[in-house]
Image 1 (spheres, rainbow, N blue to C red):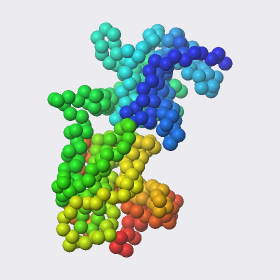
Image 2: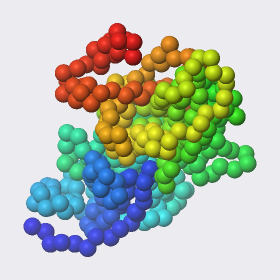
Image 3: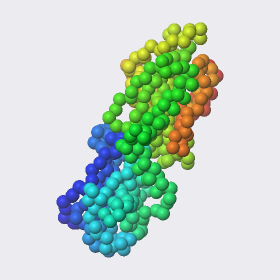
Image 4: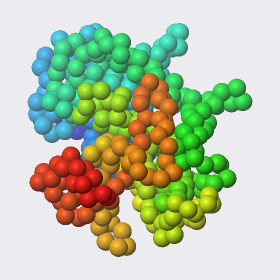
Length: 380
């Protein structure tokens, strides 16, 4: 077995969501690109783990891959016949490398900047599906599929996705009097749509910022209808949810969401005139804020028919998400949220369900259609 070698760090960078670290390291023999769940996220989630992709050898590679090194967790060199250019031994530096995070934050590309003309070339990609079926990532200097990387695909859609992601994140950093961030552009449109849905004016809503040190950004708006108070997120859809493409054929239909919840009022009456809402208890607002951040904190996604569970001061409650707005809700108008970056934006409604029904959904004893049909039959 090879002796241990000193590891040298070239890049260490945390994703805009604060949950994944990008690391580029070398041991004087090979350069590797890693995505590693950040320590704070690992304590909470532990779902992402670590992804690794070979980038290039720094000396001539062996004839075969070193299985003992791989078994011991040592970054192994790529065999010379699996390299596009076996003589490419240039050691990159922090100044010649750039990490581009994909918009959902669970994948990234490594770009190398040419010192001659400052052009940027993609030299490695760890996409969101890294770690599935023996695949770890793509490398531009890889010639054949191996246990540590695959050849860089000739895929214009992937290239465009990386370019779009680079433009997206740079737009947050380069805002000026002439240009606006996505938040400044999109948030007013989302709020306007919510105002129309709940037939109200800016003076008749309460706005609360979703707390957090990282993306996604969001606000929670509170509205008043004759029979309900309504909490709804605004801005969450600017950020695509992770993992959607792993489960659905058309992720563009599901990856952007806003979330709303109806709360019955004690003074509910269709005859009550318009009035500004009374602030709801902070616990209720925080529960919605927690649900809003859940996909990025847990590397998953929320969509129609998904259920989850919350612990409250009154005990555990089951929650079901649906994309259907009940037509019988007084004071709601059917409006559609405007698309963003070519994706549909879905408004998911939170519906409380009994613990028994939650358990039955989780075990498969009860189907979503059956639950909804039963709710309609009972008038709920």
